[in-house]
Length: 444
Image 1 (spheres, one colour):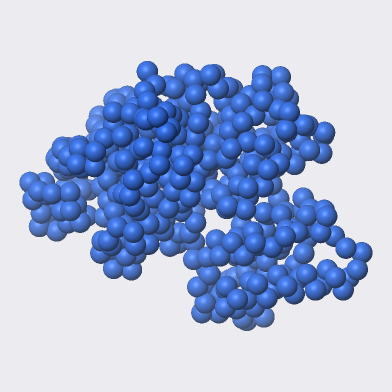
Image 2: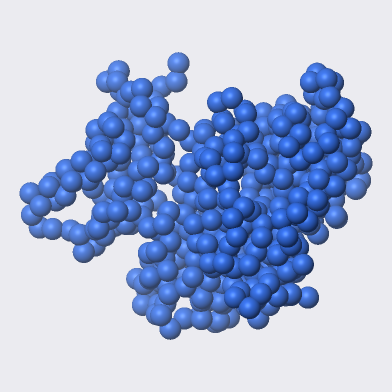
């Protein structure tokens, strides 16, 4: 049953836990943490060996703050123990596997028990409810249904809420438009870049977004810049929200955006214990400081995960939210420690480029960063897509505009990039994650 939060925002899936006092949330977290540590220590040899190396035992963890004494886990651990080295239950009790793409080697594999799938669906039902989705909605899925966690995770979470699901899958944009029109779809699940592509194709075919049934976009799979979100909302006449998750810690459902705090996402704290650490030293940072997000699963049976280093940079606050939810909020992730590009000794994040381009009228949200060192020195070229109304018959005007973009980028990046203006639609659109960086530099 969908329960109510408060009179300000009744859109809660489970008000009893989502609006619980901070003291109760911390009590729930600690009780679950103690049990999870014992469960993991007794059943997973890799963790037991790390405990012995650190000279600690499960009973040494006496407060939530003591979590800092536990070993970190990262993606390399999952690769080293591939495929089932972190499994804590008999394989006959694992009812589903999901995995990363494995484009750089062996994929990251995660297993789920029936209990784990129930928890996952509950977390997703919460986040879609936060976004304003109700059981009366018709939800069209534009994620694929393969090993990627996004498709199945959001599908079953929406079904748990009671929505009608349209499992359209990825690709075939014109079919998506037909389904929206014929089935009166009200919610679209996709990457933000694919949502914008659906919008563009619809516009080219005369689709009237202002008159359509669509009202909510649930985005994930890649960062959504403020500029892109505003453009989609303006052109598709919908409310766009982001959600956060990653394969290693279940998938989508870790955190979601409410309609009162659009730049933050509420963490499902009764299932995920968060820390923010200094990425260089691993030391915990005070609340409100920017650092790397670390997550501990509090009730995962099949593949428990202690202190997983996400590499995502954020800050977290427990300050009250206008929506009435009491769970902590994380600032939306715009950068990752491993996304950092080093160009001629200067550290650059793609999010910096996004922020600059979003503030320049006449540009679409699509861009591509190309790195090469053919001349022996690193060169950064940024392909920037113009809007149709930004074209000019005057070469001088276009060149002045290009130099304006270069100046704005130089002020932020502290190096001078090459800027190439490209025609609308020329930067590749995909149903999956958009490729924003092409690094062609030779690696020694």
